Image 1: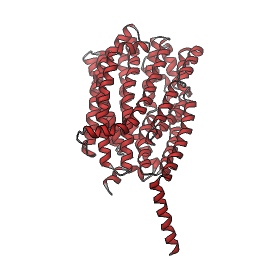
Image 2: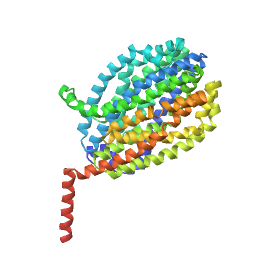
Image 3: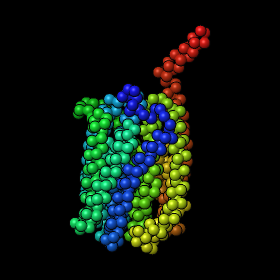
Image 4: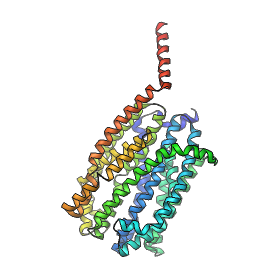
Amino acid sequence: MSEANAQAKFLTGSLPKHIISMSLTAAMGFIALFVVDLADMLFISMLGIDELAAAVGYAGTVLFMTTSISIGMAIAAGALVAKSLGEKKPERATELLTHVLIIGGAFAVVFAALIYINLENLTGLIGAKDQTQGLAISYLQILVPTMPILMIGIVASAALRSHGAAQLAMMVTLIAGVVNAVLDPIFIFVLHMGLDGAAWASVISRVSVAVTAVWFITRRYGGFVGLSPSSVVRDLGPIAAIAIPAMLANVATPVGSAYVIRAIAEFGDAAVAGMAVIGRVTPIAFALIFAMSGAIGPIIGQNFGAGKHDRVRSSFNASMILIVIYVIPVVVILYFLRVPIADMFNAQGVARDLIYLFCGPLSLTWIFTGVIFVANAAYNNLGHPFYSTWVNWGRNTLGVIPFVYLGAQYWGAEGVLIGQMTGGVFVAIVSFILAERLMNKTASEQIKSPKNQEYFEQQRAFKIMHHRR
């Protein structure tokens, strides 16, 4: 088997097996990180200061924005690398990855600087006040400067998934999770660093993500190409064509979350703390859904690059089925664990009410969220990333603001959560229809292209000659 064929492993074999394997390994890695994130909240809750948990909730909203930008750049890397591998051009895949890292790193430095100098305005905008705001700013001043390091790790991990190296990508996140889990209690309790200790543990964890991911890329997949300014400028266009809409799409989520946090802040720090707990339980409970959006992208990208549109559609449909099969039992488990989850964080009053509400039938709306995730992966890897931009902004504006506002008016803090989780149902339906039309369109365009027309004419002539013989 040639090197190109060996790296484009999704062009053959069982698609459900590929999807499950990629999703499960990615989910295991995500769970490791999210469990540590949850442990952060647990340790901070053990300090017995309500403002600390609320500060983490506010800080998390700002950090969500920086992470979303990094994920947007990773989407560009994953789509370009996967498509190049599908076209049997591994050298081109290496070159594109190098250039994404260079461009992404430079962008991250500028973006992190802008966030850093506006921390007071940003935290105030989402409702943080007084001591809680000061704690949130202190936490963010430690973590925001590490955004370029985080971007390198996330982009390199996306490239590993595009090569089909699901286990290596999983190892990257597992190692980061272990580092954070070990350092958290040491910094918070042993060294008495409190909230700042949790932030420094996360900094070292981010460094481990970048170092490990780059190490695997270097050792297994040829590393990177040398710096060539002219080549970087040449690739700026195709990289920006995916990265910009992907970043805009991902920024929509923290914008929507910021509105939710501001709405919930009207009901006090306890309500913000309750939402912060939900924000950390959610990615653990629905880790496979988060993972699937990154897992399905390389599978679609490689088969799209190879012109195998039947496998593109089959991948998409299999993902839809897997979402439903996964979400229903998870919701049942959450329902039976609602009391232990609330007790674990000493949640009382409105915070406990919000956790109980989340751990019930309301979480079935994650089926629709999963549809949006997979549809966005299809848009990005089929060459139409702006579709994901419009869908995500629709989800986080029309699918959040009116629903959250009305929910708050009628049902208070619980109405905010109800509005946030139900508003995406209609957007999911639209995104599914759009993805189906896009798959039909790309398949039709490739068949009509001159290159493919020539191929089909050759095949037709061959069949005629064979028939005459």
